[in-house]
Amino acid sequence: MFKPLHSYNMKRKYAATALLFLLLLVIVTNIYFIYIVVDEKTSKSNEPAKETTVELDRQKAQSAKEHQNQNFQNKDGHKMTRKYYKHQNASIIAAQQILLLTQKLPSHYLELNEQHREILHRIFYDLTPSSELSSSDVKQLTDQWVTNEEIVPESAPLLGSVLKSICNSKILKARSGRGLGTQLKILLTLEGNMTAIFKPQWYPREQIIEGPVYAGKDRHNAEVAAFHLGLILGFRKIPLAVGRKINLHREVMPVADHELLETFHQEGNNTCFDGICAYCGPHDPICAKQDILEGSLILWLPNKVKLRKIRHPWQRVYKDGKRAKWEADEKFCDYVKSQDIRKIGGLTTLLDLVDASIFDFLIDNGDRHHFEIFEKQRSTMIVMLDNGKSFGNPAIDHIDILAPLYQCCILRRTTYERLLLYTGGTLSIALEKSLQWSHISPVLTEKHLLALDRRLKIILGAISLCLQKRDENHLPPVLL
Ligand SMILES: Nc1ncnc2c1ncn2[C@@H]1O[C@H](COP(=O)(O)OP(=O)(O)OP(=O)(O)O)[C@@H](O)[C@H]1O
Ligand SMILES: [Mn+2]
Image (cartoon, rainbow, N blue to C red):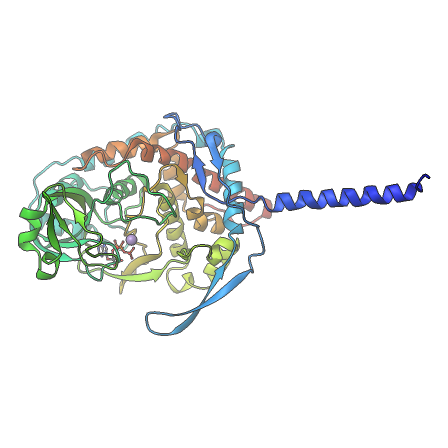
């Protein structure tokens, strides 16, 4: 018996609908996570993102509204509710769009720009030690340098001499950095009434820090590299940082206070100490090679400056499987504009946060949970303090660090122009050269240096995305 023709047609229709449904399901469940693992063999010529493979974290790009509340008590004992979001669709979609545009950058974003030579020449001139300075001169000069707009001026011919002097100055007192952040550090008083933080070396240069962007301990060399990169890019809002090898037995123990000294002990031939901090303890001492411990010295800001700590609007939630609002909501910048930022410096603060996000993306610092500004002064400048969690993994680009840039789509023209000076692979060369003066040179491995050139292209991809979006939607300009 033949079945009637319409019954066949019906079956075909059902089959086609089922197939379509299956196809849709596959597409929806294949939205990719943002970690970009780059082929470690990236060549010196630094081919654009061709070699970039995108590693997927299977997540559905679901509604940004999906969240859960968690109640907690803040430091003052007030009951607070924080919303955690399950998905990070805004970050994922933006990262995909940015990567696409990074592969199609216009030629002036890729070619070498000769104009960088002039600026670098001046910076290298400043970095060259020229005269012997007394410690009190150094203190006076570095205090004078700090204004409401910067920590080191664009022209600082004595910078190299100052850095050298900080490296050589005598340590008069050593205290635990108790109450100063969570990581192990020593607070040093140097001759000339200078104060500096000492962050010790935990890792060899080539060690890759695996895990989330904020994983691991502080990297002492990251502080030094960040300071130098700040000079090159015109972000002169970073406290002076130098590498220094310290003899614990001779230079620290005799001047350490009781509390710090009690945490010192010997492990074989090596002098070790536990320090005093949130994560410090006998389970995790830091050990010198015999008596010599490498670290970075970060010069304390002048006494006239008091810092005010403010929660970063694009702060991470530091909890597995939980996301912040900014990761879920592509319109998060509108929220920031209407809330937090107005109480500080408005647009200036937003532009500072965008600058900081560009800088942090380059150095791979995903741990800027707070930012600090000068209190009781009319300045709203964001001080780029604490760059220790940077340069962890040269093979990964955490594009979501750029969220302030691609969500607000505004950028200082001066920052844009500075970035364009270092296209064509010159950023890595510039930083490598400027770090040659460091006392702990080589400060960064070649892989970390090359990552800068790759990340610069991704920043230009993000800027391209903003320019494109603004054009399409007839919005105000990106560059301010
Ligand atoms: N150069 C400096 N001048 C003035 N204050 C400083 C300086 N460096 C650090 N501080 C103060 O000490 C605090 C802790 O320093 P830092 O952020 O480097 O430590 P941390 O252990 O990494 O902190 P966290 O665990 O919060 O990330 C800063 O928030 C700042 O208030
Ligand atoms: Mn920190």
